[in-house]
Length: 228
Picture 1 (cartoon, one colour):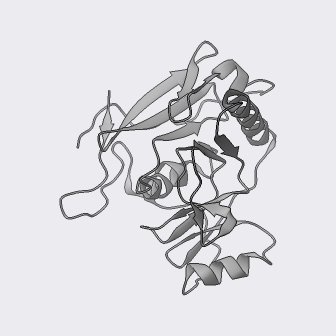
Picture 2 (cartoon, rainbow, N blue to C red; picture 1 turned 135 degrees about the vertical axis):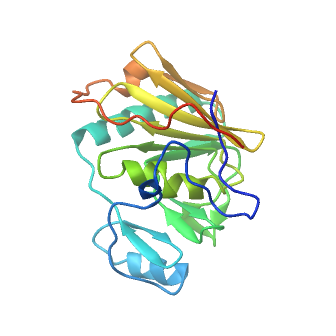
Picture 3 (cartoon, rainbow, N blue to C red; picture 1 turned 90 degrees about the vertical axis):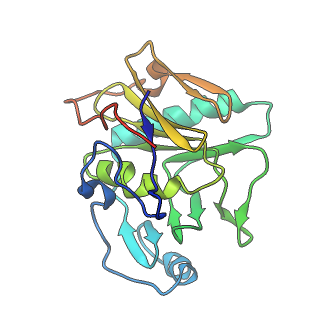
């Protein structure tokens, strides 16, 4: 299985293997800077659209269409059902995740954990310790989700699983942390099952892609080579 390592011996981020440098940067920038995360949070209260914050820069979020919303709704329902009777919680994209190392705030499509929450500065709309994060990728967000965003998510000590879900084919890609490295798994077809080990949930791809009309195939990620 491929292993992905993300820091070199100088502590500097390396490229995600199999991807070019363009995969480190988001699609669009809102064109506004802030001196601090607190200033961004204050500004966002009156903003018309959601944006993500990374070290002073604001990145505009793309709108979500029918397929994206159906997939996230399917996933939320399946994960919530799998968590019943346990001290676990799954969140939609209205919950922000704080990443201290990157001085960043992100809106994952889906995130969650089992156990106690670590809220940021007493706010109940921002938490710091997701066990898993799921992003539903599109043409406009794929490079951001695979590149910069994934690199920053990996600095979260609590994060055990990162999942990318296609809107164009029945394909789910998972990155699972194992002894400091991220192991890549590819799941494809209705018979495949997504296993979220961090919260002990299993979700058939047939349920994830229920009521979805798929179109042409898309780029599906890095090749199977890599190293520490």
